[in-house]
Length: 258
Length: 287
Image 1: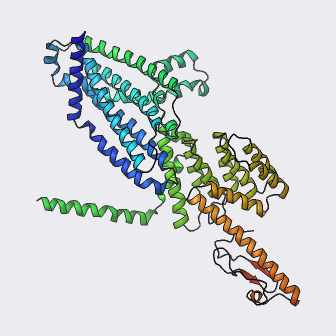
Image 2 (image 1 turned 60 degrees about the horizontal axis):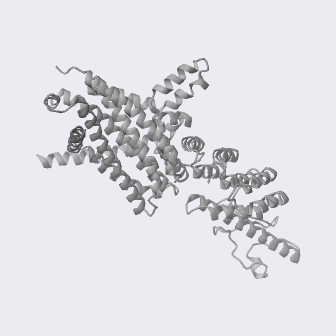
Image 3 (image 1 turned 135 degrees about the horizontal axis):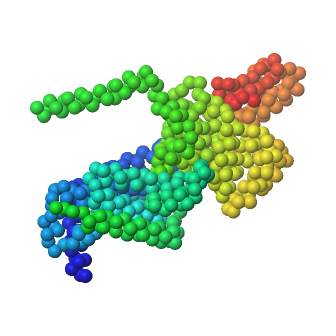
């Protein structure tokens, strides 16, 4: 058990190092410039809405940059190893496909955590430097963003286990976009009453509802996200991640690399 | 080779602002805002940016401020046609952006050249805000004020002000003001009190500045009326209208400047004794 965990962590650490080497964290520089410019200009332009807009920009950038990293690095995690044939020597070692797959997931998850943490710190610092209170309720939006990103990575890895990196990226983006429109599926009953409710319910159930992870507008106004809501959101994310990771792992295990 | 490349880059970069200036010359600096008409519904915009509605609202808010400021400063024959759609899109994307309702309502209602001169639309924006933020007593208070100040409807205003006073945390004076508005039908004293409240409640910026101008206009109207009374007193003493306003000082009937709050001299018609604020003055408003 301990050996299995340490092997998984070794893959995770290696994946983290790899993403850093691929200059993924360079997006932080852009984030810092964005916040600095916004902090300097908004006071003049926004009729006293600079704090709210600064928070909106910071949180939206965390979500957007995080999603881009999750999709484009996530889809390459498995497929690149296959294309470069670096997977074969790895699997020849005493390392199971499950340990490899979960290690890759954990490594990118850690990269995203570091990225989000740095961005949150940057946002709090900008608020502080522009004379605003660094609001801890922001965490109520950042944590669900992280959950959404982890689910995105799980999808990216699932698709990249089944197909090429490019197609996997397209499919992952599609799932994320459709997931953000999940409420439209739920509202289908109102606009198309002829559609059988069972079909609507089934569609709604099989699409991950990414809007569940969106509390940005709420916290931008200083409203805390209730702990119970965060708890249920975490459970929702965990359930989806387990299902998607499980499917991805099954696909990866079933794949013939000969 | 490197310096040649640098020179080429510099030359190319300098062409960007130059060509932009030429394009603007042909198409107008503010044409970009007109694109917003293609996105006529906030709901459509909202559907385009799932998860980023708040940020989109901020962008539209900044465009609203820019558009309004740009029109006020640079456009002759200002009509502010895009102000309402911009406010609607902004508040659909972020229904909690209280400042957008207040800003939109004021500048839609104010007569030209300060605003669009469409007070019914201003009131409609506030009604939308009140529906979106039922716990905001300030928005409801503004709705009541606007019914008096722009629609001259003290009955409705009084009812709305009473509703505002019942919201938890509402200012204590709202109930008294509701009674005053009903009793006096929205006279100048009530209007002064309302603009004074709006001035006190706004932070430094364009909304506060508008309230300050409004208070100065009321000061000017008070001064005009006092001057007209002095003219009438002089006519009573001498049996004819004074030939010029400065005669009043010699008679000891007027000791203040003969100008409105913006420093523009009052107009005077010696054949009728009418004193008025000249239409060149920023204090002038149509009757």
